Length: 167
Image 1: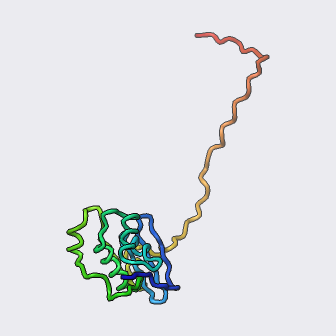
Image 2: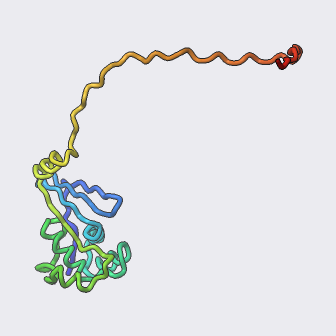
Image 3: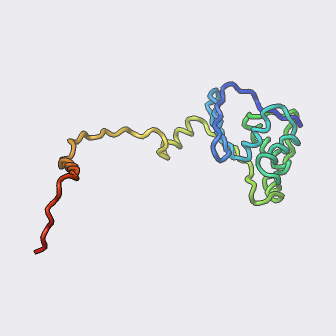
Protein backbone atom coordinates (compact mmCIF):
# COMPACT_ATOMS: atom_id res chain seq x y z
CA UNK A 1 0.00 0.00 0.00
CA UNK A 2 1.27 3.46 -0.93
CA UNK A 3 0.59 6.27 1.55
CA UNK A 4 1.07 10.01 1.20
CA UNK A 5 -0.11 13.06 3.08
CA UNK A 6 -2.63 15.19 1.28
CA UNK A 7 -1.29 18.51 0.12
CA UNK A 8 -3.56 21.10 1.61
CA UNK A 9 -2.48 24.71 1.41
CA UNK A 10 -5.06 25.77 3.96
CA UNK A 11 -3.78 23.89 7.01
CA UNK A 12 -1.82 25.05 10.01
CA UNK A 13 -0.02 22.44 12.11
CA UNK A 14 0.91 23.02 15.75
CA UNK A 15 3.20 20.41 17.27
CA UNK A 16 2.84 20.23 21.04
CA UNK A 17 5.65 19.27 23.48
CA UNK A 18 4.14 15.82 24.17
CA UNK A 19 4.29 14.90 20.45
CA UNK A 20 0.61 15.48 19.74
CA UNK A 21 -0.54 17.76 16.93
CA UNK A 22 -3.35 20.21 16.30
CA UNK A 23 -4.12 20.60 12.60
CA UNK A 24 -6.41 23.44 11.55
CA UNK A 25 -8.04 23.36 8.11
CA UNK A 26 -9.31 26.84 7.38
CA UNK A 27 -11.18 25.83 4.18
CA UNK A 28 -13.34 23.24 5.95
CA UNK A 29 -13.27 25.15 9.24
CA UNK A 30 -12.23 22.05 11.16
CA UNK A 31 -9.64 21.31 13.78
CA UNK A 32 -8.10 17.83 14.01
CA UNK A 33 -6.26 16.68 17.14
CA UNK A 34 -3.73 13.84 16.86
CA UNK A 35 -2.19 12.13 19.85
CA UNK A 36 1.54 11.38 19.74
CA UNK A 37 1.07 8.00 18.03
CA UNK A 38 -1.12 9.38 15.24
CA UNK A 39 1.20 12.40 14.99
CA UNK A 40 4.24 10.18 14.46
CA UNK A 41 2.38 8.28 11.72
CA UNK A 42 1.33 11.54 10.06
CA UNK A 43 4.91 12.83 10.17
CA UNK A 44 6.15 9.60 8.55
CA UNK A 45 3.69 10.14 5.67
CA UNK A 46 5.15 13.54 4.72
CA UNK A 47 6.42 12.10 1.43
CA UNK A 48 5.02 9.17 -0.61
CA UNK A 49 5.88 5.96 1.21
CA UNK A 50 4.67 2.47 2.07
CA UNK A 51 3.01 1.02 5.14
CA UNK A 52 6.19 -0.92 5.98
CA UNK A 53 8.34 2.23 5.78
CA UNK A 54 5.89 4.22 7.89
CA UNK A 55 5.95 1.44 10.50
CA UNK A 56 9.76 1.44 10.48
CA UNK A 57 9.88 5.23 10.92
CA UNK A 58 7.35 5.19 13.78
CA UNK A 59 9.30 2.40 15.50
CA UNK A 60 12.43 4.53 15.24
CA UNK A 61 10.82 7.76 16.45
CA UNK A 62 8.25 6.50 18.96
CA UNK A 63 8.59 2.91 20.19
CA UNK A 64 10.23 -0.24 18.77
CA UNK A 65 7.16 -2.31 19.72
CA UNK A 66 4.82 -0.49 17.30
CA UNK A 67 3.11 -3.00 15.01
CA UNK A 68 2.09 -2.64 11.39
CA UNK A 69 -1.55 -3.12 12.46
CA UNK A 70 -1.30 -0.11 14.79
CA UNK A 71 0.13 2.02 11.98
CA UNK A 72 -2.58 0.77 9.61
CA UNK A 73 -5.23 1.80 12.17
CA UNK A 74 -3.70 5.28 12.42
CA UNK A 75 -3.53 5.59 8.62
CA UNK A 76 -7.21 4.61 8.37
CA UNK A 77 -8.14 7.37 10.85
CA UNK A 78 -5.94 9.92 9.08
CA UNK A 79 -7.47 8.94 5.73
CA UNK A 80 -11.03 9.27 7.07
CA UNK A 81 -10.09 12.85 8.08
CA UNK A 82 -8.56 13.46 4.62
CA UNK A 83 -5.05 14.04 6.02
CA UNK A 84 -3.48 11.16 4.04
CA UNK A 85 -4.41 9.22 0.94
CA UNK A 86 -3.66 5.60 0.10
CA UNK A 87 -3.29 3.83 -3.23
CA UNK A 88 -5.54 0.94 -2.17
CA UNK A 89 -9.03 0.78 -0.73
CA UNK A 90 -7.51 1.28 2.68
CA UNK A 91 -5.44 -0.51 5.26
CA UNK A 92 -6.38 -3.95 6.51
CA UNK A 93 -9.39 -3.82 8.79
CA UNK A 94 -8.07 -4.59 12.23
CA UNK A 95 -10.08 -3.72 15.28
CA UNK A 96 -8.65 -1.67 18.11
CA UNK A 97 -9.25 -4.64 20.41
CA UNK A 98 -7.04 -6.85 18.23
CA UNK A 99 -4.32 -4.19 18.14
CA UNK A 100 -4.48 -3.65 21.89
CA UNK A 101 -4.03 -7.38 22.49
CA UNK A 102 -0.70 -7.38 20.64
CA UNK A 103 0.78 -4.21 22.17
CA UNK A 104 2.64 -3.49 25.34
CA UNK A 105 1.05 -1.13 27.85
CA UNK A 106 3.42 1.74 27.03
CA UNK A 107 2.16 2.39 23.48
CA UNK A 108 -0.87 4.64 23.04
CA UNK A 109 -3.43 3.68 20.42
CA UNK A 110 -3.72 6.30 17.69
CA UNK A 111 -6.41 8.88 18.34
CA UNK A 112 -7.65 11.35 15.74
CA UNK A 113 -10.43 13.66 16.92
CA UNK A 114 -12.13 16.26 14.73
CA UNK A 115 -14.08 19.35 15.77
CA UNK A 116 -15.58 22.11 13.69
CA UNK A 117 -14.41 25.61 14.54
CA UNK A 118 -17.83 26.46 15.99
CA UNK A 119 -17.70 23.36 18.22
CA UNK A 120 -14.19 24.30 19.37
CA UNK A 121 -15.31 27.85 20.19
CA UNK A 122 -18.27 26.48 22.18
CA UNK A 123 -16.00 24.15 24.18
CA UNK A 124 -13.48 26.94 24.75
CA UNK A 125 -16.16 29.29 26.07
CA UNK A 126 -17.49 26.64 28.46
CA UNK A 127 -13.95 25.84 29.60
CA UNK A 128 -13.26 29.57 29.93
CA UNK A 129 -10.14 29.19 27.79
CA UNK A 130 -11.22 31.93 25.41
CA UNK A 131 -10.60 35.62 25.89
CA UNK A 132 -11.27 36.75 29.42
CA UNK A 133 -12.84 40.16 30.02
CA UNK A 134 -10.42 42.93 30.91
CA UNK A 135 -11.36 44.37 34.27
CA UNK A 136 -10.58 48.02 34.99
CA UNK A 137 -7.81 48.51 37.49
CA UNK A 138 -8.45 51.19 40.07
CA UNK A 139 -5.92 53.99 40.33
CA UNK A 140 -4.82 54.21 43.93
CA UNK A 141 -2.71 56.94 45.47
CA UNK A 142 0.77 55.82 46.44
CA UNK A 143 1.02 54.65 50.04
CA UNK A 144 2.60 56.98 52.60
CA UNK A 145 6.14 55.78 53.22
CA UNK A 146 8.56 57.15 55.79
CA UNK A 147 11.68 58.78 54.37
CA UNK A 148 14.61 56.43 53.91
CA UNK A 149 17.17 56.37 56.74
CA UNK A 150 20.21 58.58 56.42
CA UNK A 151 23.43 56.77 55.69
CA UNK A 152 25.95 56.62 58.57
CA UNK A 153 28.72 59.18 58.55
CA UNK A 154 32.15 57.87 57.76
CA UNK A 155 34.54 57.71 60.69
CA UNK A 156 37.47 60.05 60.65
CA UNK A 157 40.51 58.16 61.95
CA UNK A 158 42.24 61.34 63.08
CA UNK A 159 39.50 62.04 65.64
CA UNK A 160 39.59 59.92 68.77
CA UNK A 161 36.49 59.07 70.62
CA UNK A 162 36.39 59.60 74.38
CA UNK A 163 36.27 56.36 76.37
CA UNK A 164 32.90 55.55 77.82
CA UNK A 165 32.40 54.90 81.52
CA UNK A 166 30.24 52.24 83.03
CA UNK A 167 27.81 53.41 85.60
